[in-house]
Amino acid sequence: MTIHEKAMAKEPTFRESVDLMFNRAVALMDLPPGLEEKIRVCNATYTVRFGVRLRGQITTFTGYRSVHSDHMEPVKGGIRFATGVNQDEVEALAALMTYKCALVEAPFGGSKGGLCLDPREYDEAEMELITRRFAYELAKRDMINPAQNVPAPDMGTGEREMAWIADQYARMNTTDINAKACVTGKPLNSGGISGRVEATGRGVQYALKEFFRHPEDVKKAGMSGTLEGKRIVVQGLGNVGYHAAKFLHEEDGAVIVGIIERDGGLWADEGLNIDAVHDWIMRHGGVAGFPEGTHIDQGALLFEDECDILIPAAIEGVINLTNADKIKAKLIIEAANGPVTYGADEILRKKGVVIIPDMYANAGGVTVSYFEWVKNLSHIRFGRMQRRQEEARHQLVVDELDRIVAAVPGNMSLSPGFKDKYLRGADELELVRSGLDDTMRIAYQSMREVWHERPEVEDLRVAAYLVAIDRVAASYRAKGL
Image 1 (tube, rainbow, N blue to C red):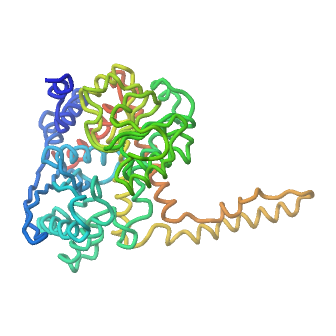
Image 2: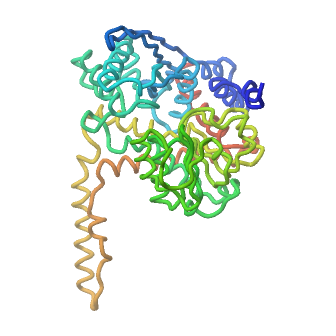
Image 3: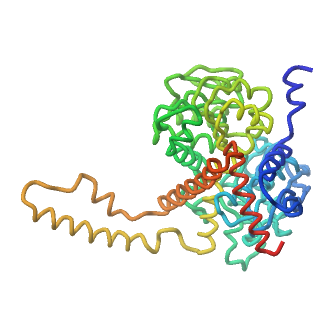
């Protein structure tokens, strides 16, 4: 057995990692054993096996929808399409959704779904048949329902699949006026909301910006200053990784020095052109052959290179017992679900690496999904009622400023561009970004308060679990449990 195999043999599974991290947190709480168990266990998992006629024969697919906690309803969580989907993974992800929603105060319980297949093996027409049948199997058992269970995109799915699911539900529930709210992450023309596609990546950016607003926290990570000039390695340049890297570079001045993909990695000390790399991956399926930077065949080795911030943004378990002690990043922000295993988390904490945990860091998606769900239930886009009234009130202020400036001798004038910026009322995208920014700031502050005020809390992950579990427990107590 190789060293790698021996290390992985000791590694807990993703599901076990989530439970172990939960146990670390509840050991610091005073919960009745019964309530602790009720919060920890998964309420129910539905397994479905269905057939679809493809290419002249029937192909059978296996899918799952798990409900971890219904302390609030509807329950919320993505649907992923991947070959590795299994019941343990789906239940672990559903548990994380429970804690994530509680942490960011989205009024949902936790759920998750998955379908075991490789989307790359099927064309668009075949994917539509498969997705619609999966949606049918779930919806007829109320595992998709705007009042009970609301899916969203995840790995291997996106706006296209969500539009198919929403339409399938509407066909089955022709008189449900709120049918569009049965799923989030839809295209704009199908009841979606501006800013949803970028939401998880944008949330990662906002999480880092909030972290860097607190010099004491930055110092704990062995850094100083702002995001400007910080060297970042991103693993996975999919939807989340791409948007996080793009915003951090373009808006905050960070330098993306490394990108890790399935077919290798790219490194450039001066920084990589994120849009160019992303376009190349979309056209060629990987980073191999990209004309800039240095290509590394074993992309995972870039986890161990010198950088300030490491952003794992693809799948779980990529930082584990085999590489944790070699990681040189000062700060890790978990843009993916469960990218750092329980064993690796212990090693990194002892090394002094600060980890911004997944249940907070990638909560941008569910936050904006919440906004989309509210939009669908209210049947009106954000900003429609107040935008012009806001502009009219601002016009009064500008007119008065113009009058005052004109009355003062000399060449006084308002700053160039001030009028245009001040007069423009917020549209839906600006309101969504504002709501997401506010959510990420408040959630971080709730974690930070526990992290700094309780000496026994050594890290942000335990702080996040403590905040989330306490809120779930309060919901159950309010129900009389």
